[in-house]
Each structure stands twice: as C-alpha cells, then as structure tokens.
Amino acid sequence: MSSAENAAQQLKELAADIAREAGDPAQRRRAAGVSLAATKSTLADIVTEADREVEALIRDRLHRERPGDGFLGEESGAGESATGVTWIVDPIDGTVNYAYGLPVYGVSIAAVEGGAEVGRWHALAAAVCAPVLGELFTAARGSGAWLDSTRLSVTSDTTAGALLATGFGYDPSTHDGDLQTMRQVMPIARDVRRSGSAAIDLSYVAAGRLDGYFERGLQPWDFAAGALMVEEAGGALTLLDTASARPMVIAGGADVHARLTAILDNR
Ligand code: LIP
Image (cartoon, rainbow, N blue to C red; front, side):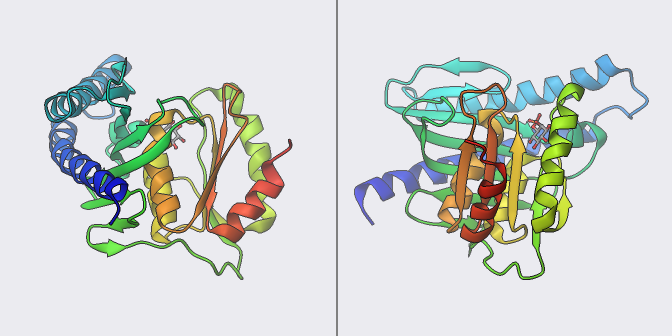
C-alpha cells in the first residue's frame, strides 16, 4: 500500500468510527420524536435538533482527532482547512424519511482534498452509516469500497434494462423539469426507485443493488461520500452543469453511466 493509500485508509477508519457513533443519537432522537400529527415547527425542530446534535458530535470528534482539517456541514456551515483535508458531512441524509420514521436515512461523512467546492474536490475517504438498516458503507481512495467486510462492485449486465434511482428537490417549481428528465431516461430503465437519500442510493450503486443513479440539485454533503463509494467500486460518476444552481449527478457502472450521460449531457 502506498503512503497516500495508507493515509486515505486512516481517514476512512476515522470516518467509519464517527459515522457509527453518530448513528446512535440519530436513532435515539427519532425514537423519542413526536408523531406525524405534531405541528410542522415541532416536526422541523426534532429534525433540526437531531441534525444539529449529530453534526455537532461529528464536528467535535473531527476537531479533537484532526484539529487543522476543514469542515463543510449541512447544518453548521464551513470551516477553513490548514491541512489540505476538508470533511464534508451530512449528519442525517434522508431528512424527510427520518422525520416520517422511514428507515432509509444515513450519516454521510467524506474526507476530501482541494477544498469543498462542487467539481473541485478529490475525495480520499468516505463512510455512510444507515443505523436502522445496520449497515456501514466505507471507501478509501485506491483501496476499494466496502459494506462492513464485504468488498463492493457495481453491476455490468443490464440486459433487462437498468434499475435506476433518482430524487426530487424540495422546491415544487423544479418538479416538472425533473419529471421531464425521468421521461428521457425511462427507455433505458427496467424500473426506477426513489429512496429519499442520495448517500444511500449511491452506496447501493456501489453495492450493485442499483444499476445507476441520477439526480439534479444535490448539495455537496448529499453525495460527496457516495461518489467515492461508486468510484472505488469500479463505477463512474459525472457532474453536469456544475456552474448552475442545480448540478446533475450521474453514476453507475461504465455502460449505464455512459448511457445516462449520452441522454442527459446536453453540452
Ligand atoms: C436529500 C437527498 C435526496 C433528495 C432529497 C434531499 P437531505 O437530502 O439525499 O436524494 O432527493 O430531496 O435533498 O435533505 O435529506 O439531506
């Protein structure tokens, strides 16, 4: 193992340990949460408090273990890096699932170099913990992607069509465009899944549970970890329209990635 791969492996082990630890308070707060009859503010507070509590735990741990590293989190914003490494964190990806008590949500932690600007970073290590599902996905640059101790690989045979996943933004004005995108890709699909968590979807592409994924409008913390998972599982991930407010993420094995890009890349 090269020194770079060894360093990435150490970052992965830290990310995995923190993601696993952070899954506990996420589950505890959800179990103590209010029913769906609660008013929006209460529902929002529970999610907000849980997001903030989990992100604070992650940020504190990272500051203690690697004090000079940068940080970009969904809830607490950015902190500059003095070491060249920045952590990109979504404390609870799959927010709406979490609020409704659906099990598909994950703690997503990525370590990158080159800053945290979309399309500019080089991911080094990743961990996505799905606490309710009891699964921890990890990846280190040059050392593969893993589900617990099982090495992951993307799919290659989509003779029956590709099982794709996607998502929609919170802004209803974007839904017509997203549905148009869905219509464009359906000819290559056998079916489409919409789990509600990009981090979990991309981890599933790496695991071969999905053949491909596309979504417009993700934030860096939604996909930074999952993107490395896909690449280290032998897949490909492309960002389109990175200068726009809603870049498009495309991921999959080589064939599905190429077909999705041919359909969606209008450059
Ligand atoms: C979510 C993404 C998901 C997308 C949702 C939302 P959040 O992130 O993971 O893929 O479809 O609209 O953006 O808000 O749960 O962190």
